[in-house]
Length: 142
Image (cartoon, rainbow, N blue to C red):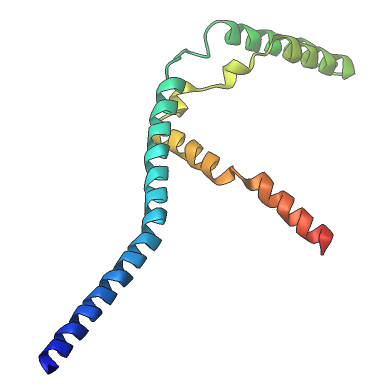
């Protein structure tokens, strides 16, 4: 009779350990899977970004950009002796009319690690607006 009670107590302890282990596993598993999915999603996004953004390679010193800079230098060089508001307005008008923002883009900057940094930045800023709204609501109501 005592051996049956001892065996039964051992089974209960084993069953209790299994339950604790399952509870711990189900507590940790969602967090681990979320982190793993973010890592995989970030790496995949970095591969896509680096491939898409790195496709257009061009030399920015050639063509229109070079002409733009030469004309800008000529305007400044001619007007340096008597640089007034008119000179500044001419430079401003030239920059406003002829400058193209694509000249500032450098496709070689989009390697895997800079793309991964961009993806992680997106991950960390999503939902920030909601948190700010909640903080404002809590400070206004309290």
